[in-house]
Length: 298
Image (cartoon, rainbow, N blue to C red; front, side, top):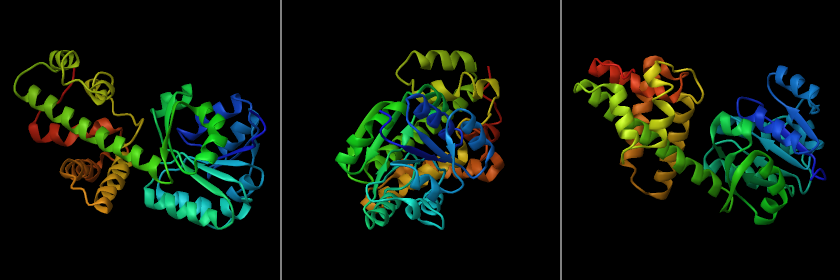
């Protein structure tokens, strides 16, 4: 598997453990990041540090990205000292970031002008999945390049899905994020109402968990976060708000009405405006708790 030289740019909460799993799989790895501490740390574990995205690309056959927002992807790939400056014909950019399909297509077209390739490959599974190498990876782009990069994708993920042409992976991820927001907002509303109506929060949670109202977001956000008053950021309100906005944009482009998507975007906007943007998405319950005058705690 070591015939491919891999680069990784964006070594944050998700990118760092993903890059470590690529190293563990035996790939030569070159890394770059805006803050240098994590680069130095990975260098001690066998990675080669690089000063710029262009330098990463010069040393790599496959350049992986894991960046927060579309503007970051555009700057890192297309900006000064960006990936495009160092990429060669045949270089593949594998973008694990969650961005819109329009940005994916624009970056892919710019790389294609010089014979390079782009795969949008957003992931789901959080930091736990990133550390364990069990992420779900949703890939859009050229099928032959997908197959070429599959060993790299398998180093970071357990379920790898080829979704179709460039942008298709981004669409699948954004539909997942719409459901995350809608399911969480619904669970928050039901739990606040139940407590306000006089039912014990723990009894309510335990019963719904064993009934048809159960959901992944009920399980993720309530027992260890909301019900313990713990809103430590594992995935922030700000980031999901960004994803929800991108998902609603897909609806606008496709001319599909998104009543629930648009509403949940407003709910997350409310949480941000009340100062909860940097907290975990579980904090989306706080504005409703304040309005209702109750807290959902065990």
